[in-house]
Length: 252
Image 1 (cartoon, rainbow, N blue to C red):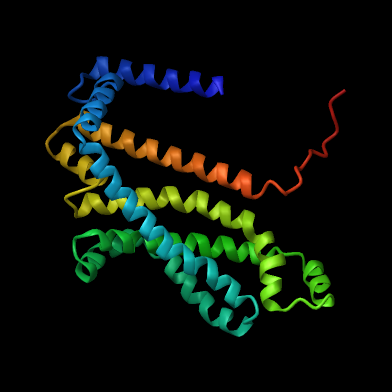
Image 2 (image 1 turned 120 degrees about the horizontal axis):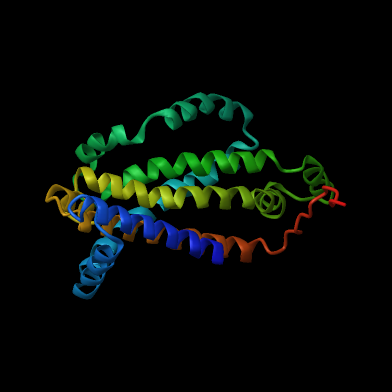
C-alpha cells in the first residue's frame, strides 16, 4: 500500500516539476488540476458530465456483455453453428471499432445511443472470447459425473459450467468495463455536447490545458474506482475457490 502511495507522490512531484519548467500553459500542475476539479464539483458541472459518460458506458457494457456471455453457453453443444460463426466473429473482433463511429452517428444520431453502440461493440467481443475460454476449460470429468447422477443441460450449465467459467467472466469484466468508460469518452471526443470526452475536447480546443487534464483525471479516477469495485465483487463471489499455494521450493 505504502509503496503505491510513494510511487504516486513521486509521479505528482515529477508532474509538478514539469509544470514549473514548461509553464502551466503547456503542462498544468497537479494543484491547478485539483482546483479545477473542485470548482467543477462545487458548481455541479462535473457530476453532470460524469453521469452522462458513466450511463453510456454501463448501457453499452450491458447491451454488449449479456449476449457475449450467453452466446458461448448456447454454442457449447452446437458445434456446427459454432464452426459457422467462428470466422465471422473473428473478423468482427479484428475490425477497428473507432472506424464505425461515423456510421453509428448516422444510424443512431449524435445523442447517447451512438456512444452506447460503440461501447457495446467493444464489450461483446471481450466477454465472448473470455467466456468461451472458460467454457472450454471446464473439466470434462465433472460434466461426466454430473450426467451420471442425472443432471440435464440446464443443471449442467448452472452447477458445473457457469461456476467453472465465472473467473474468466470476471476477467472479461475487469477488462471490458474500463474500456467501456474509455470508449464512451472517445466517442464523445468526436461528437457530443456532454460527457467527460466533451470536456476534454472542449477544453483542449480552447487551449485550456488545466481543464483537459482535470477531465482526464476524473476519467482516470472513475476507471480506478471501477476496477476496485469489480475486484471486491470477484473476491466476494469467488470466496469459495481454494487459494493456490506456490509449489516452488523455499530457498535454503
